[in-house]
Image (cartoon, rainbow, N blue to C red; front, top):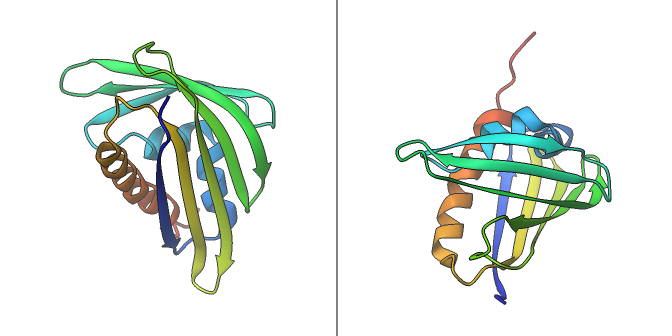
Amino acid sequence: MSTNSVKFHRVLTAPPSRVYKAFVDADAFARWLPPDGFTAKVHHMEPVVGKTWRMSFTNFTTGNGHSFGGTYLELVPGERVRYTSKFDDPNLPGEMETSVTLREVFCGTEMTIVQSGIPALIPVEACYLGWQQSLQHLAKLVEPEIPD
């Protein structure tokens, strides 16, 4: 069992409510979470504490993919999202936990993300790289002010 973890800190020029929505809206999650070179499909998402979510990533070039899902542990609109993740692949055992903390600041939202329990088979550098790409996608989704 791995004890690898990653931590990120970002300030986004978007209100906490919009950043929170990006974590609990299936279409938004599928839009920003996959790292570069991957597509995503959300198969199930019920953002209620104790309920579950499932999705898959597909490598755009090779068509190979992996699926994963978990349970919502904590949901505080505009403030906090905490959930588990587990890969369907038995070669990637264990359960990860992701905690997202949002705080309103004068220019938008201060966000801290901690993901722990990363399987030993996944190099921690790959997690950092993937999350950095995902967080760039998140900023592109939540920061623009687009009128109706």
